[in-house]
Image (cartoon, rainbow, N blue to C red; front, side):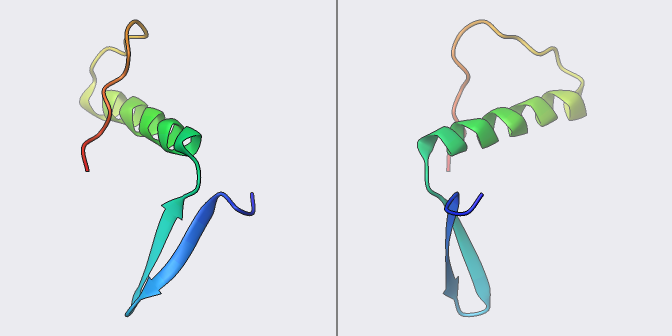
Amino acid sequence: MVGLVRTHREDRRMIYRLTSTHLVALIEEALGFAGHLVHDTPITTNGPHPRRHR
């Protein structure tokens, strides 16, 4: 799992950055799935998934 994230320190904070757009998509998919479970909404598999806004 080495190399999946890059890190750097800003004052007392540690900043983590994913190194691949594939990893970003995987994390977004996992967060979307968790959101469906928390809000008890149906999970659909047709069509593109909306991207989170930063």
